[in-house]
Amino acid sequence: MIRTAFITLPFLAAAGLASAEITGEYHRYSVGGVEFEGYVARNSDLETTKGTVLIVHDWDGMTAYEERRAEMLAAAGYTAFAIDVYGADENPQSIDENRALSGALYQDRALFRQRLMGPSQRPRRSPARPTTS
Image 1 (cartoon, rainbow, N blue to C red):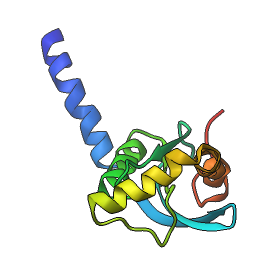
Image 2: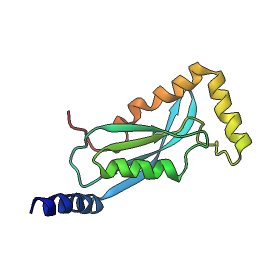
Image 3: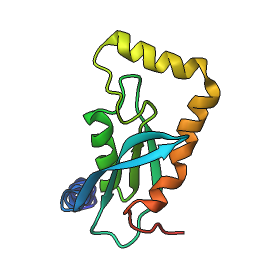
């Protein structure tokens, strides 16, 4: 009987996550006069969330990977905000473009830090649900 419970509980938990109403939307914001576009995902079935998680993309910019990770965190009860550090008009398509955009930020640490920290207030202003304390 205990073994049955250990086998059944993970499936019940997964079924609960599968029924969650995950919503995701692009969110425009600016930092230092530059326009950015991130992705906010949340579970709209929840009145409150466990908190907000910021996701920073890899050197290839915002992709479906970051969106999917945000949705996975939303399914776990968080509001997830995948931030952009390159700019809304930057969409690197090659290794050379990835290298140029990421290299510029590595060379200017103050700018990189500003772009990383700038959106930290944005999830509270986005249409996300309130978080629990």
